[in-house]
Amino acid sequence: MTGRAVRDPVAVLGAGSWGTALAVQFARGGRPVRLWGRDAARLADMAERRCNARYLEGVEFPPSLEVQPRLPAALAGARDVLIAVPSHAFRELLGELAPHLGGDMHVAWATKGIELESGRLPHQIALEVLGRERRVAVLSGPTFAREVGAGLPTAMTIASPDAAYAQALARELSSANFRAYSSTDILGVEIGGAVKNVLAVGAGLSDGLGFGANTRVALITRGLKEMTRLGTTLGAQPATFMGLAGLGDLVLTCTDDQSRNRRFGLLLAAGHAPQAALESIGQAVEGYAAARAIRAVAAQAGVEMPLCAGVYRVLYERLPAKDAVRELMSRPVKAEAE
Image 1 (cartoon, rainbow, N blue to C red):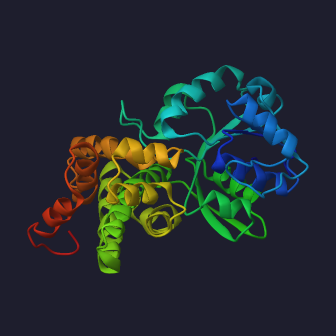
Image 2: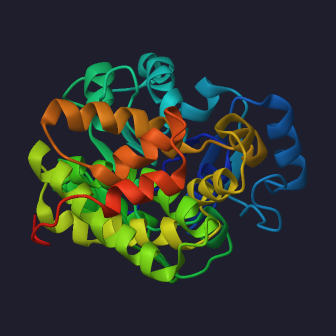
Image 3: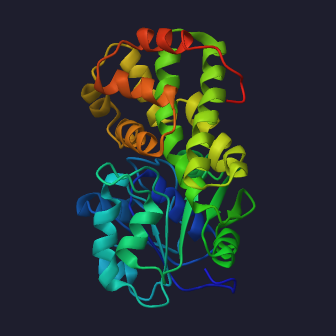
């Protein structure tokens, strides 16, 4: 997105709920959009029905949205590429994408998470795979795909080290019911998007065990403190975590059952084993892997994150959630600002 009236196609890679919703949002303004995914049979069904019946039933595709099963064809002539795949698939897709990128093509993503093996955030992976010259951005914030698809009023943050690119992309994506804000703090926006998923699992556990509204609000408030502590230690801007990609996304995912991470926590509280809960949801639950990745990143940075650590212990060490809460409540008393 260059700030001019762009009519070049945008390629949206990832035909799940969020990728489909973003493709629809771009196409609503008349921008030619090509939506690509790996499941050819499902894509054929989407092309025939002109909707994503599995993930966004009832949301019709605008005329300018084309379902494209071939990656090279989806990218041909496109100036802008938007990736909407789970974090574990991000590096692989970037590798497939790289040989097809022309020098003037820009890459953005709506992927949230931290690579488990390396501890890298998406923009750090993109830097490794695509190099430093490519214009890149991340889309994040309190956005449920179904509500975006339905055209309900929504706001989000677009962050890029290139301020002009972030602003241009925000203008291109915005409409009467969708407002995008720009930021240059790509590090902070991505940390917010990763940490909030772990905290949403904790909120689901808490509510599922009947701990009540007081506990949920305490978890959100202290979770925001943990998110900010990690982010600022790694070099992010404190104000980012008080915005849409920090506090906004955290409140959304901790309080509404459209959140897969929250529903995952509710299933765990009901007695389901983690793998059974993941299978029941049937879509990526980023908070599960993120709990491990954030634990490693926090340890390396020397940052204390007791809530995220508690969720990790419930998921991977089989600590009963009630015991995790008891441990948190028995921690030494200290000043709230710490």
